[in-house]
Image (cartoon, rainbow, N blue to C red; front, top):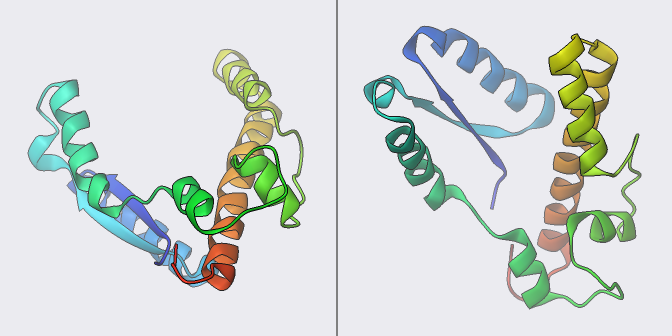
Amino acid sequence: MAIKVFISHQQADSGKARSISSRLRGLHQIDTYLDVIDPVIGKSGEALAEYVRAQLAPRMHDLNATLKRVVSLPLKSTSIKPVSTHLGFAWPGYQDWFAAYLDYQHWLETGSLDALARACLYQRADVQSMALVWRWLVAHAPSERA
C-alpha cells in the first residue's frame, strides 16, 4: 500500500495543487489524490465535510489496527510515539501534542513564526514517524501486509 496525500482544492487553486503534488512526488516519492471541490463548495459545512469524508474513506487505512493484528512489540502502548521511538525514530523538538497546540494558538494570537515553526515541526515529525512505522510493517509483517 502506497502512501498518498489527499489534496482537496478549488479549481482556481489547481496550479498550486499540482505544484504541491509534483513537489511531494519529486522530493519525497509521495503520490497524491487531487480533488477539485468546486461542485460542493457552496453547500453547508456539514455537507462539505461529508463530501470530504466520503472521498477519503476508501483511501484510509487503520495502521494501528494492522500493527496490533500482525506483530507483537515489547511495549506498553501501540500508539505512534512509543512504537516509532522503539523502531529508532528520533523525535525533534517536543513530543507533546498540547505544546504544539499552544504554539499554534500563540502564532494565531501574535504571528510568531518561531511558534508556528515549532508546531509545524511537531506535525511533520508525527507524519514522518507514521511513515517509518508503515515502512517497517511492510518490510517485517509476517504474512499480512499493511
